[in-house]
Amino acid sequence: MTLQFQPPPPDHVAPERMVEFDFFHIPPGVGDPAEIWHDLVRRGVPEIFYTPRNGGHWVFLDYADIVEAYRDYSIFSTYQTPVPPIEPFPVVQPQAVDPPAHNTFRRLLAPMFTPIAVRGMTDELRRRADQLIEPLAERGHCDFIGDFAERFPTGTFLYLFGLPESRLDEFLALANTFFRSTDPAARAGNITAIYAVLDQLFRDKQANPGDDIASAIVTARNEAGEPHDWTDVLNCGFLLFVAGLDTVTNTLAYIWRYLATTPAAQQHFRDQLDDPDAFLRAIEELMRINAVSNLFRRVTHDCEFRGVQLRRNDRVVLPNTVANRDPRVFADPQTIDLDRAVNVHVTFGVGPHRCVGSHLAKREVMVALQEWLRRIPPFELDPDQPAGSVFGGSVMGFTSLRLRWDRR
Amino acid sequence: MRVLVDISRCQGHARCEDICPEVFATDAIEGKCVIADPQVPPGLEDKVRLAVRNCPEGALRVAGDGKGGA
Ligand code: HEM
Ligand code: SF4
Image 1 (cartoon, protein in one colour):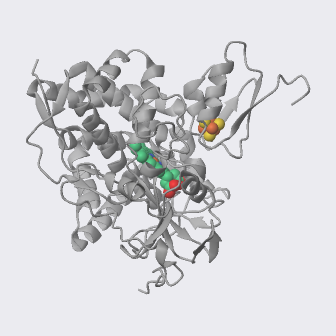
Image 2 (cartoon, rainbow over the protein chains, first blue to last red; image 1 turned 30 degrees about the vertical axis):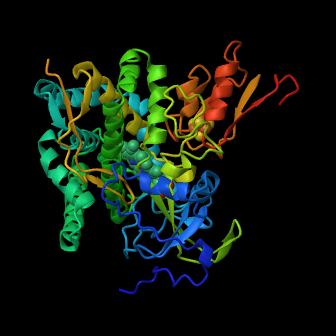
Image 3 (tube, chains in turn green, yellow; image 1 turned 135 degrees about the vertical axis):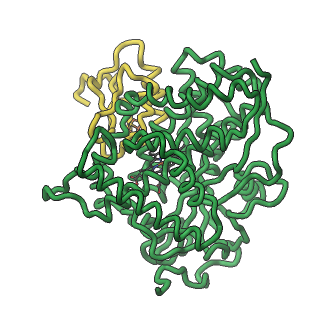
């Protein structure tokens, strides 16, 4: 396999734009993985810089540049973007396809994730959250990651795809290897296993369609009235599996970590349990401050961007967490203001690939928070938290988050 | 006061609907903004302005009272 998309040696990068930065590496003692990004801003590195690490890539730090990169797919493509480069990478539908072809699967998914559609899922999400939280209340402590934050979105995936609850552990195991394993052999086998499971699932749904998203994808027709390419169907299933798990898990983890260390914020939410407007506004601020995703793009042709020479196949990493604290856009950006009135955060991206699951993700967070606060009294971090349970990368987060509270 | 959406910019964040559901909705097919009546009902002007400022795509704008046809 030729490394066709391997970036060339960076002789087009001006020396003052070179910065050593490895976004997978979280130094010992750093409790919040996003801090490695904010540290760059504090150090005053150029707002467009290049790091030779992880195969070499650009980083944009200015909100306006990050937004422009999301929108201008004529320069910044989502096709074959992994950092470090892995090739060939599955062309996940619709994220790894540029407009206009992107529209085919985007339009297929969009109706199933609108605010109206997601409102219809609320009761079931609530039932599932409740089922997980109820037994914890008695215990007085938990590992929030393993006991809730991984199980809840994985269960949501089973629900959306019309799969039985009994397969939760199997899907948890697949997801855990996918997101956390660093062993190349385990990783390769894992992707094969996920595709095998999806292949079987879509075949079952094709034979016996139900009222679920997997059935809708497999029975959909393209403009010519034909079924979609089987590879595209699998790649869409694969994206839905990976896009809504680690992101939701770590968003929850960040939020619960913040609440555990900020009793006033816990109280704020307890006071708003019956005021959906205020609750939503506050969640939007939690989304701004806890942006777990760093997105990738690939440069389509040699060009100049903001006076900087970019070369075809250069990779670009867009840290949402940095965009969301840009003082040119957000008043008092480091302050978590649960009543913030204007909040144009980019946690779900912007432009054509804006997270199609954003309404679902916010609903999951809202329902989880409501049910948690109804059942669990004020909670705090457990002092026996294992050290070093953080990770960086395209999604940042925590491998463990121990919480405790007074038993009822 | 009138409020208008540039549907080619709208990407369906639904922030407008979250803030002012009296004026903004989201369609069930593409998941994009729908404004049933661009004429903003009296009393909702501030909420609509807030929705406009919260659109991450800059897809919304307010115009005058529309009597000139805007
Ligand atoms: C808090 C949780 C989540 C975060 C932070 C998040 C973030 C994002 C971001 C930043 C993008 C843009 C990708 C890009 O521009 O390259 C995206 C796209 C996407 N997300 Fe999410 N996401 C979350 C939850 C979900 C959930 C729950 C689902 C679905 C079940 C989902 C499905 C998708 C899909 C299908 C896309 C691709 C859309 C397209 O290319 O048109 N996400 N997400
Ligand atoms: S907030 Fe803006 S982008 Fe989102 S639905 Fe409303 S108009 Fe569209």
